[in-house]
Image (tube, rainbow, N blue to C red):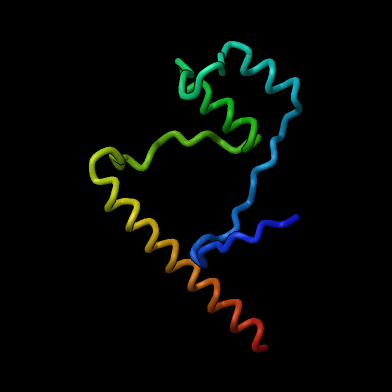
Length: 102
């Protein structure tokens, strides 16, 4: 049964990454982590690298971050990101409308 909840138009479908490794890989790579409590990784950098490799395969791990400090101006950053997303979604909708008219 599909949900009947109304979803805002601004929520675009996202692609769910598919792991490039089997269960045995994940079990071996994450054996040192204890998932008994959320956000208790003790070594989040290693966990991030394991996750990246497991989801992205051979794609190089990012060596640099964007450098934006998300702690202080979070509301402004989120607002800007939403506006950019809406703008991109609008461009996609416009392109799809042109395609449909052809």
